[in-house]
Length: 306
Ligand SMILES: [Zn+2]
Image 1 (cartoon, helix red, strand yellow):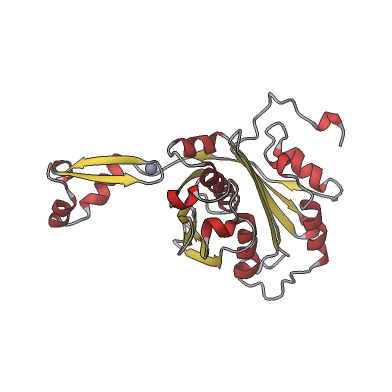
Image 2 (cartoon, rainbow, N blue to C red):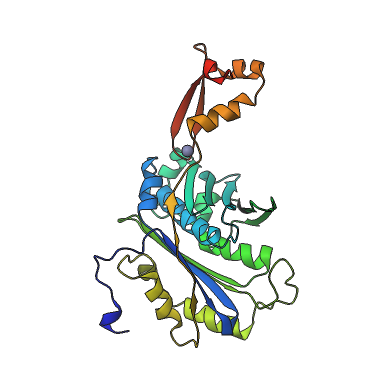
């Protein structure tokens, strides 16, 4: 790698972006994502301790990697980590049309008693990772669930694909705590004709897959979170000896939530009058929370009369 491949630090355009690529000769396709201001926006709505901010940053990066795979632009991807005994009780992230949001419910007292960099086991205990794909056009919904095992969320996601989906996959996630930058790569082996759920003949030890997997494994955490390094350059660094790399159009990512007072009113109007009365406080106000935004929506009962 020569010095001219390095772009000046001023060009920090490759933040909040997902770039897809394919290596046709190896039946491989992948995504690289880097998040910056999106993380700031999500995290600024909360006051999370560093280990929680870190796990949410990883989870948002993973959600962006998976969400950017949706062919249906209006489709939604939801990732939930649920635990029975962990410090993290619930972690939810979702993606729709390039918009990301997420939050974490956790036990602050127990978190205070662990090390600065707790293991996945310490954070989640016995937990599960559920990934749900909702297609807007067909209305189809598919959910896969795997135990939260391994050393990291990236390991758990790799298990999701290899166990639940039978797709050989590599997932790497990196977070730079100081600058609120996170990055990730997802690489998958998808031989021709094995789209969809029919993958009975996929071999997890395919030589073409091994070749690209080993190349992708050379990626460094520092490269994933270096805003001065364009995602395209990063893909080129990893796979420059391949005869053909197809780059797909980048998907810009932003922070977005679907909560708004009018939507809340619409939802509340679906409840019968007596239930609305039960939900309201003595002053006739129903308070609805959005956990993603840490915002309250006080709605007067009188606003609900059509
Ligand atoms: Zn919200």
